[in-house]
Every structure is written in C-alpha cells, then in structure tokens.
Image 1: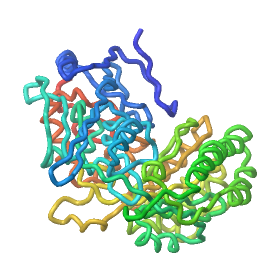
Image 2 (image 1 turned 45 degrees about the vertical axis):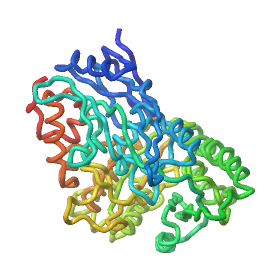
Image 3 (image 1 turned 90 degrees about the vertical axis):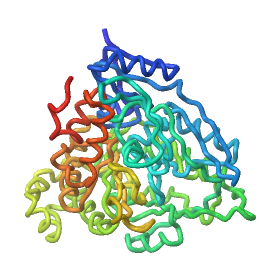
Length: 487
C-alpha cells in the first residue's frame, strides 16, 4: 500500500507509490533517472492549499538539503546559499546569528525556502521572496531526457525558476543577498476609509491592513524601517508579542472558531467583529521590534483554508468596494448588491449567480491586504510586464487580498471564493496565488500572464517528457499543451 499524504489544510489527500528523502545530489539525480518516464513532485512543509504537490508516482522530500552558508564580499555584501529543503524559521535563526536577515519575509515561517519561492511567497511592501533569488540550482533533464544539474544566475531561465510551481525540476539550493538585520517601527490604527489607509503608504511602506467584515472598519499595521543609528527595541515589545500570541494567535482564532465553526451563529460572528474585536485590539504607537519578529505570526496553529487574490494597485479601491458588496450578499445582510455593482456583474453574466448565493455564507475572518512590488519573475502573481516596458521600482505594484475560513465542511466558502476568483479575474485583472485555493483553469488565467508561453517553452527544455507536471499544473499552466509530451 502506498504512502498517504495530507496537507496542512486537510483539503488535499492522496496516495503515492514512491516516497524519497535523498541526502545527496547524486541520489536526486538517480531518482530522476529512475522516474524519467513517470511523474515526480516535491513535497515541502505541505502548508499550501492548491494540489501542487499531488502525485501518484514519486514524491521527493528535500528535508536533508537544509544547509545555510553565509559569505561576505570584500565590500561587506552578505550572501546566503541555502539548501532547498531548509525551513524559513531555521533560516531566519541562522541569519540572525550573523546579524542579517532575508530581503522579504512572509507571514508564515513553516515553509521551506524552495516551497516559498516556488509559489512566490510574499510579505507587504516589498517584492516577493522569489524576486530576490540571484542563483538557483536545479536538478532536471536535458533535451534527451537525461538527469542533470542546472545553475541559473541570470536571463529568462532564472526569471522562470524564481516561481515555477515545481515545473522546472527539483530545487537543490538558492542564493540571495541578505539585508542587515533591522528594526521596524510599528503602529496600529483604526480607519473608516481605504483612502485614509492608502495615504499612509509613503510614510509606512511596509504596512499591511485588515478589512473587518460586518463592521467594515480597517485596521492598519503601519510599518517603516528605523535607521540603524541609535535605534533600539521598545521596552514593551516583548509584552506586545505575548499579547499578540495569547489574544490574536490563540484568543481571536478560538473566538472565530467558537462563533463560526462550532456554534455556527451569524449573529455571534457579527457581534464578534462589530462589538468585541474593537475592545480587544491593542493599538500600540511607535513600537520598535526586530524585523523577522514583527513581520511573522503563528498563523498555522489552527487548520484553515485560504484563497488569495492579487489585483493591480490601480484597481484596489474598486476591488475593495466589490469585495464588501459580495460578502454582504453572501451573508444575507442585503437583498441585492448596489446598482453600481449589479451593473458591472450583468455584462459578465454573474449577477444572477450572486443573487442565488444570498444568505449562504457568513465570512468570519479579517480580509488581509498586502502590497507587493512587481516581481522579476515570469509567472509570479505580481510579475510585471517584460522589458523595456517595465515600470520604475515601486510602480506597477499589486495588492494581495486574502480570504480565510475556519469552518468545515467548506462548500459554502468554496462558493464565495470561486465567485470572487471568477468575477475579479474578469473585472480587475486579478491573479490567484498559486499555492492557495485555486478554482480556475488555464483558459481563465491565460491572458493574465504575458510571458506564460515563454515560461512553458523553458519548462519543456528542462523537462521534455513532462515528468514534473501533475494534473494541477496541467490545468492551470499547460492546458493548451496537453498531449505534446510523452508520458
């Protein structure tokens, strides 16, 4: 009987025939040779909700490729060369010993570095982690289907490998430039309008914010980097971290599960967000904290499912209004969307779809917004246009809008997520996070990625028999190419 694999969210489970945990590059190459006419996928921390790891043939766990090598150039530049199976949490700890850190840090530290870049994991206010990869070593195939190692440090191959969903082979190691460890100055403020929040970005470029369902207030975590001279950690930073862990990581999530998942009470969910939450949020002012501590949280303590929808910055105001309207209809708070929303849904044939879902699902988690700068990667969600039309740094950014559920079964949430995915793709040029719930097919996302054909061609050169493709990547990336490779 084959090995059974289940992901963190519990929405993906499959049985595979072969499971490997190689300890050397020679072993990796031997696995590729052995399955050169089969299927291979790589499993990392399983902290993803898309079926990207699903494979009934060979699954490779790179846990033993966890080395961290730190080097300093003559000019003081610090470089980290990291094994593909190294966990982000472990990596941050090793970098801290050298008083440096990663150039971009996501909310969760449970992923491996290879898993994080393969789906363009991101924080807020910077590029995704994929963007910063200066070199990637990959085990893949040559044109004749023989296993070999590639090292990409420039050109389209590097741009493709920075976010490839595992379609370009097994990542052995990556290299990136480190940042000196730094302190963030953070304040939490409550706002009534999105314009008030967006006006803070120039002063607080690393901020993220939360749209609170049912009250529709916005809480912004305003963040900026402190100059190193004279900066010190706030005396109450430890107290705030304890508060955050007990009242947010645990307390808020238990309250959400109680109201939404266990009691399944629409009224209690409304009460939680309209009345209870405002009294429990500690809104510190000018709290200085180390970057890797301030930017992360223990989001993995409770099993959940997430969809994340990226929209270009020019659409974020309209998209936010749209999200609120859709959530209110699904909640049953209104009988129908406002005329302006109905008017844009009618031409795409989705007005009646929305009305049919009235009162079927009460959203029960803050909707998170994070700004991501354009990535130099072919198919990252926030990838920008190809040169020479690329915008200046900071322009052409995207907003990642995250929706999470703690309720099971998840059919009602799937309906909301699918509606938002299909409608926002058509209305706001939206892109979905590759590693999260992904209900769309290639035909629905094809036009969103101008360099997708280039990405496919590169994949075919290093994987001529389609060994690294599973049903998910076929559905979303290679649909028009089905049948072009030998299985």
